[in-house]
View (tube, helix red, strand yellow):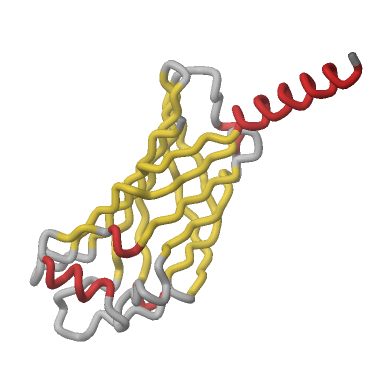
Length: 179
């Protein structure tokens, strides 16, 4: 009887812990480095892995570099080459962070909540601090999030050249529906 009780307690604890961690394998990250000279350096990755812990506020995203799809195949090829992202050597973008004021979100009540997020973004072999805001939407028990921010590609060792075809300050947009 004691063994059944401990087994049941373990299963209950595992289910409770899992319920706090929401995940997705289909978050979307958009990359926009367009300039007035060239509207083509824009891509989207729809296979991003994401996680949000509703108890601790921990968040994380991981995007495969070669899954960013550009409308122009030549730009996509350049994006993955050594001078740019070098996806053969550095296959992932990652963000690890935390919602710094989790008290602003009521995960049990439908609504839209704007929260501060801080963490680190790693692209290639460079890791930098990142602070932004995210919007978390709770609707009928489902949780989604979105955020937009800019990064300087040069901060991550990416050489955009001097022709003005690629913006050094690039807009990143992340959106996800968690399960």
